[in-house]
Image 1 (cartoon, rainbow, N blue to C red):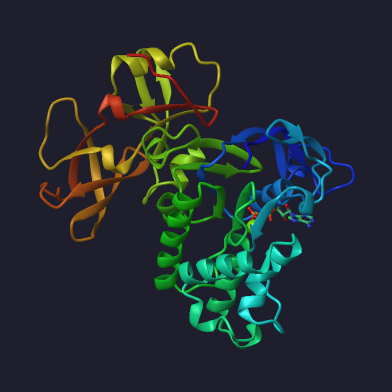
Image 2 (cartoon, rainbow, N blue to C red):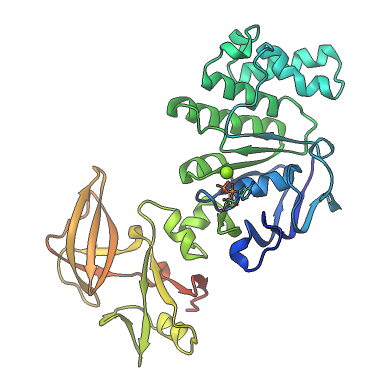
Length: 365
Ligand code: ADP
Ligand code: MG
C-alpha cells in the first residue's frame, strides 16, 4: 500500500529537449492517495502511458521525483516497486494454461501453493474465467486473453497499486461495462490504489471517484466528475468533459459593456468587474449547454439568437444557435418549449465561468 507522489516530474524522449513541446510530461506535481479509485483521462498522445510507465518503473523520468510513501523510487526497477500494470493489449503466455498464467505473478514471489490456488480461484471467479482455467491461453478469444491479463494484475494482494492502461480497448462494449463494474467491486473489496487510464469520459466517470484530466503532458484538473462538469478549471476540460462540450465565447470589455465581437452580452455586474483591469486579451466566457436558459418568447435582459439547428434526442434537444457571430449550443429538456428560428438566451451568473489565458479565474459576487 502506498501513497504515490509525483514531484516536479518531467519527461522527454529526446536526448536534448529544448522547449515545452519536446516534453511528453511537462513539469507536474500530483499525489495519488492510498486506496483511491482514480482515472487518468485525456486524448491520445497527451502523455498518459508515459506517466503510467514512469510510476511503474518501466521508464525513468528525465526530471523530478517519484515518491512512494515519501521514499524516492526513480531508479528502482518495476520488480522492486510492487506495482501491477495491465496494458492495452493482452500480455499472456500462450503455452501456459489460464490457471498457470494467473498463478505466475504469485509463483514469482514464492507464494505457498495452497494460497496460490485460493487467489487464482478467487480472481477467476470475479472475472468469470473459471470454466477456462484448464485451457491453454493460446486457444482463448481476444476478450478472454485480456481478462487473463487483467487477472494477472489483480492476483497479488500485496501490491501498492494497480495501473490500468486502457485495458478494455479490445473488449466488446457489453463486456466492457461488466468488467468496469467488476473492477470497481474489486477496488471496494481490496482497497488497493487503482489508476485507470482512458480517453473516454464515460469510462472515467463510471470507474473513478476522482479524475485527473491530462492535456499536453500536464494534469490540468484533478476532481470529482461533478467538479469537472460544474467548474472546469481549464478550457480543455470544458471541451473534453460533457456532451456537447462547454461553450466558450471570446469577450472584451468596452466601457462597462461585455462584448462578444460586435454583440453586447447580458452578463451580471460581477462578471463586468472581474473583466476590468485584465491585461490579457485572451478572455473567454464559459457556459455549459445545460445552463444556457433558452426562451421561445422575448423576455427582459435576454439576448436574441438565431436557431440554426435542433437535434431532438427524445428526453431533450440540443440547439445550435448563433449569437452575433458566435456559435453556441444549448440543451432544452422535453418539457420546455422549443423555440423556432429565434431564441432569447440568458446566462445565469452563477453558471458563468471566466477564463483568462485558458484558465478559470474566480468571479467574486
Ligand atoms: P497517450 O498514452 O496519452 O496516448 P503517450 O504517453 O503514449 O500518450 O505519448 C505521449 C507523447 O510521447 C506522444 O507525443 C508520443 O508520440 C510520445 N512518445 C511516446 N512513447 C514514445 C517513445 N517510446 N519514443 C518517443 N516518443 C514517444
Ligand atoms: Mg497510451
